[in-house]
Length: 220
Image (cartoon, rainbow, N blue to C red):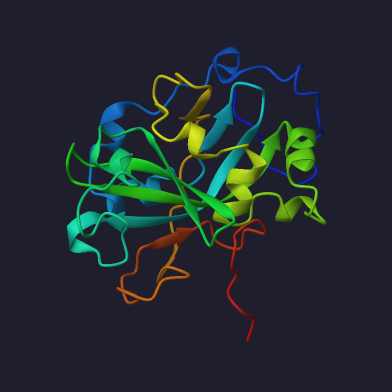
């Protein structure tokens, strides 16, 4: 069944929230990720990031990073111990530490050795919201729970320990699934945020007029 996205979604105990399998939500297949990240990214919008403990959120903002063709990518200069997961099989989770305090979560794309992926920038919590509130005590409202890459990772308890997790098989209790909600027909497209190189690449996408995105356009 499809979940109706709403900031007023009723909260449920983490132990009572059914898993993605019980909901009948299929994980995105490996071939979905085996493409250029700029193709994968907009199609990840409105998919669900889920954890085995019942937390689930709809992905509403993403950015593509494209290895050797992208000076802003961690993988631009080749593989290191830090970014090794990006050069592995598609459909895995690449987790990195940034600004000395935040974790970023990425879906690995392309072929083995390419070092490309999609950053999950923001999501709308839909299930297990109480667990996310407990993980994000600094959030003053539910729209702040996962409205940014670091916030999203914190809300889902994602740290370096989940680096390399298989998002298709769910070997560490985290997947990206579909509940049948299609991506927006006309997502907002623009430059990526918080980078100093390749700032002209239009590789950020988000759901139009969504209150959970990290940075919303200023009103005229």
